[in-house]
Image (cartoon, rainbow, N blue to C red):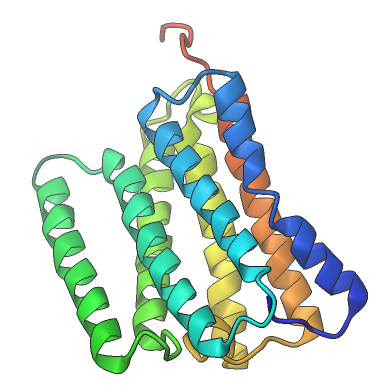
Length: 220
């Protein structure tokens, strides 16, 4: 894991590795993993945890770090798209599916042509932007439908956490020209901001499991 040189921030970054376990534990204890979005969320959280552990490997070269980032970014993209596709219906859902296949193919092809050991570049920024837009659409659909128990809908918290994290991540990476887009290490204060955003995301994801009601009261 890249070090900032600040012992407090480096220690907090290592603690953040374990935040993805929160939604996993909650979903498992509530036996809510049969709910589609929570099932995908549990898989996604486990992937983040594994990624964090791999980043602790001492002496990991930049090329290995870039390859790992690309692999996990692809898996993240796939799983989050599957989660947010739930809100798309009819022809729109079919269009999203076609776009998903086309973009994933382009994502893989671009990375193979540029080299897996290179920074992700603009394609990663495009992928993060797509996830942000899909999360915003999913959240807006939930609000428009005025569901009586919207706060008990896991997708509400998954979309909210995704919007919060990727908004901050894209903003600071775009303005600073570092991170997954360029491979440059972030300054200590910015790394702290990204870690806080990441931790907040998994806290919001956890609320999706905590507030999930398998048998919500019927609507009037």
